[in-house]
Image (cartoon, rainbow, N blue to C red):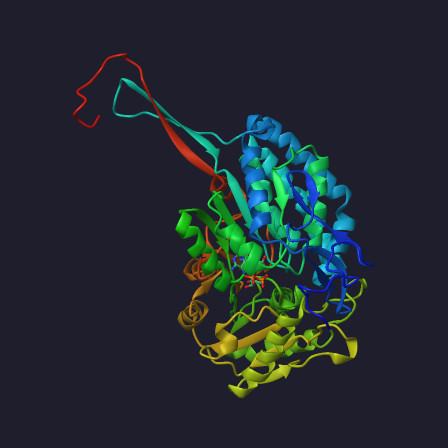
Length: 508
Ligand code: NAD
């Protein structure tokens, strides 16, 4: 099995687009371009573990071109559009994505190994982000402020933040990009997107559709390549006004350091170690279903994975029994087959990381209730859905993000202990409370340190509901009205009404 390779091109010439694999060039200023260096790399289908396409291996020179194009576009026809005009274009982008959803979903499955039905579901939902933000593009209202100075009219304007760098991971490439792109365009910004080196193709194909909708050249640019080269150059570029990053906490901190040097604002959506808190009165079938959705859907490769199960000791064995029974019926295999429930992990490093937890967790004292092994008979990067019991809160698997189908189960004896355990990590992305007691449900939801808490549900999101993390899970919010504000800056305008003058040596 081959990881994406920097040096190999399909025909070994080192030149893009000349081999047997399809080549997808970058999109900068409306042009299809190769990396300035001429280099390309292969992207791998994780189901078969073989390269299937090539993309440009960009570096700082290409980033420079893309950021310059995005900056020029701010003062071109795009910058002159009203909110109504941007809204019309956003609706068209949504319509075109809806038209081509199956094709884009197919590319996503090819690059990520995620289930075709999951990616079709995501692609069917993505247009809603464009429609929702189209609805806000013409409602970005400032305010008039009734200041304590009768000779002044003071009002505010929400102006576009400027050039946005959108850096995204490999697990849901288009969904996570569109969480940034739709509100950024609604606010009047221009965007340079940097997809993960593992999953560049769908983003490049999205760019063609944004162009088809009539969005002017330079408004949406895509640079492809590796994080330490192209991602780093983009995050550090002084021409970028806002960075919207989704990815690991480690890289998020690097991005924040680069941003600090230029005083660039950031929205950071980072990792998580989210907890299900299941009380004895919960509907255990519903809880089991939510827990399965939380940690085994998408092969556990979601930031909001409910990877810790905190369960009332009195129902521990009963609930674990249900989860193990369901986990053992999960159909692992070809992500394009309709009956498959869990596909492969998306890449070799991720596969190696999950396997390392399979050895370290039992070594630290956890018991493998089910799973805990690779599925070598399938080729690709397959592992079994895994449930670990006898986990203590200080074990690595209880503290660190696995980003794979691994559930760590910890019992509790009281509500207070459950809350303490749930809040006992530095992450704070999401969580769930399972109970039929309405008072307890809200009480515990309020006590959890997390950006999203579901009560008797899991893994539900929408364009209209803010999403983001506490603590190491991030800064800022995506989705909802809050997200579009992330891509604006407020300007206050003071208008002197009397025509008089005042003492120039005192503050007004
Ligand atoms: P990653 O942090 O390795 O990479 C994310 C992106 O950053 C990629 O495009 C990568 O090429 C780029 N990058 C790498 N080094 C860089 C650098 N020095 N400067 C700038 N960019 C750089 O993450 P990943 O492995 O692609 O994705 C998995 C991680 O993403 C997990 O930790 C997961 O929790 C997180 N994630 C978070 C959310 C959320 O909304 N909170 C959603 C999905 C994934």
